[in-house]
Image 1 (cartoon, rainbow, N blue to C red):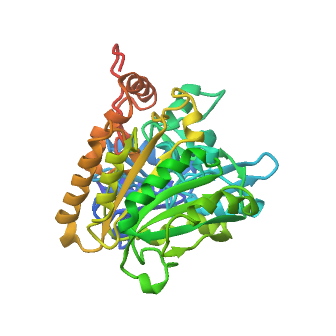
Image 2: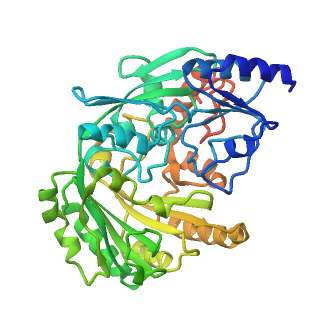
Length: 466
């Protein structure tokens, strides 16, 4: 592409245009997953909606595919592209809270940490993910599982409206009364339909202090820990979220130093209610067995929301998988315990997340997020520092995923799967009828599939119900 064309776009942007000739190009093209190494033709670092409109117009005129980056945390590398125009929203991080209506307007480049910091000034929280550096945009558009979901649902369940720029440059609002079919698709259908520039969320009174922390055991105790969780979870209040985490100390810095390097299994507890009420709710887990450490304590919600950040380091090789298991009986638990006792690197983590309570009370067709059945999400966070370990560790994750799929349906939370697994999982996550509906929305807003660096849904062709 000729330089004058790029210079015209550079002049049209309030933000920055970065090309391979610019010294900061290699820094700006990097994403969270060090395994992803892509080279966009240019990076438009947008400062507002007008920049997004200009960037999309340029891409259309020049015949460039478009990648979109919010927080750049996509494990599949969807926050970048090869040879296309990357629309980078990371300069658009504004968060505006209305404490009377308990709503929050968030720009698309904001991270979960940005949202938590602003909402907690008012004692409010938006249900979001589990790592504070995650971008709110990608999280929301693919569903949004996280710390508060048992009480308040998925992030997309708390979405009230979006501002979006279509590939043709039109500005649209999608909510329950405006473009309702688009609004349905944006709540779980990913970044297929346009470039969302801001989100409005419902917030809830949680914090500023929460009762939370970890109760950890030797990894040899995993079968008993998993059985206890399976027995107890249905009888716990919605305010209490109880996951089980497999890891090696000190992936989390708050473990005592004497346990450094030790494989452990732990209850990861969060109580989204009054701290005084939480002690009774967590008591059964604190008194189970003979834990190595009991780190349950009142702490600021912003600290709880970033507690797992040290276990998810930047600049590491990342290869993830996940699986929804319909049941969590003895065979499933034995498989999970075996996998968790044999993590391939010091940084790899596995999480067992009961998927129940508020997310499963939403009607199956209310949003594009397709999975509303009570189940168990097993999430393997394969990560390591040395690229020389790539083949060994990826092979381990693939085998672990195959072992889990023996009990599942192939459905996975799409934010938690690596790129080479993504296409298969799109078809497993959405059934044929839902895919046809999503494809119709795609055809209306992006008929040429300009936005295809995502969990892609091809647009329905004219005259076809797909």
